[in-house]
Amino acid sequence: MTVRETTSKAQNNQHLSLDSYQKTTLADIENKTASIEEIHSDESDNEQQVASASSRVQSRGEIKARKALSKLGLQKVKGVTRVTVRRSGAPILAIAQPDVFRSLNSDTYIVFGEGQTEDMNSLQSQLQAAQEVLKDAGEGAAAGAEADAEVAEDDEEVDEEGVSKEDIELVMNQANTTRSKAVKALKAHNNDIVNAIMELTM
Image (cartoon, rainbow, N blue to C red; front, side):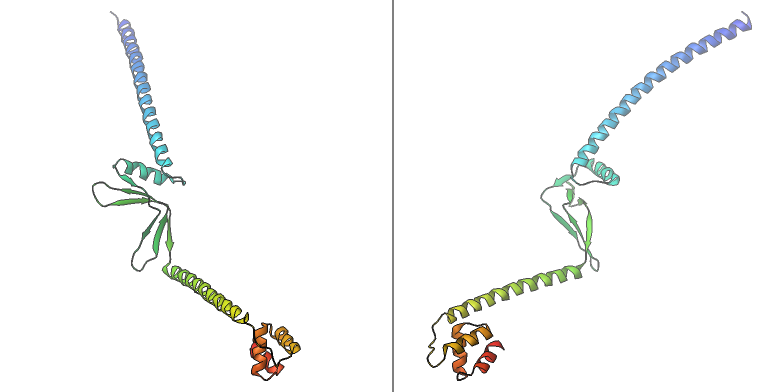
């Protein structure tokens, strides 16, 4: 055997081994790609489940955190509409419509949601304003009750003897009052129209 024959046989063997290596490598790569695709489809299913857990838009970091925490076996707490975090000397952190999860092993809670700070001073001023409105409404109701009592009192017929009808009507128009009040004021001031009007308007 010559050197050339040996070299060509070696090259053919290398070529054959390279071909078989490439075939096995491609087959392995196809299998690995299939398994990677399966993993990606599983991950996307998990991401869709996590994303559907809340109706609001979630950031990429929140989706990753939810996915990592879902592997811990946390239990979702239903019926929570608001979570507040209070710290001494700091504003209140409030989360409306949160997603709350509880650890089964301990008394640990995980809360997802958009947090907003609430200043106690502004809350107190809003509370005081609401109380003032309620107080004014209560006073308005009391004034309405007094007005009803006055109307009932005004409905009583008053003796108009000794007082002219023209004077009564003049006092009623000028003082914008009822007939019985005008008669009482005129009688109290001895039919003095000016003093009767002054009493009713001031």
